[in-house]
Image: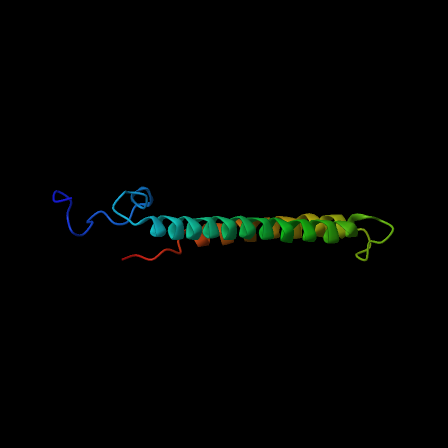
Length: 103
């Protein structure tokens, strides 16, 4: 332990959490927190997929000629809005990649 610096100059790294210098309770707490983050990230991805699927099936019903309220333009409008929704979801993902603290 004497050869290790008091403060880590390279920043935090996830693989150092399970070094034997931590108490066993800290291992359990940090593993639980990591599991919670993975669960939240998974639910976030699923919620974006659910939003797109809901949009797709509700707006896709306008392509049926018998219930098309746009007088034959429902299919074209659906394709345009579908493209816009996919671009907005991609833009949201790309913008979230840059949202990290710089310290």
